[in-house]
Length: 68
Image (tube, rainbow, N blue to C red; front, side, top):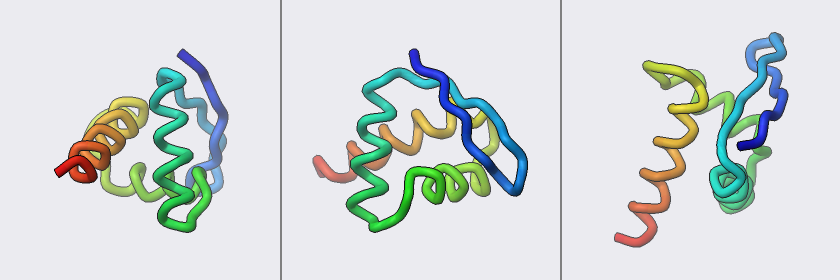
């Protein structure tokens, strides 16, 4: 589990997810041509629960969609 600080809507917050999720999040951001911070901000705008959980769900859904 790795904790990282991100700035969302001008406020600093910490997010803790497993290293595998950080790696996939970086890969997905690069594939979309956006920064990890921009992708997290997008996830943040559409989430219902906690940010860490929303990141995990986003990554799992993206990886599942890629594998078709």
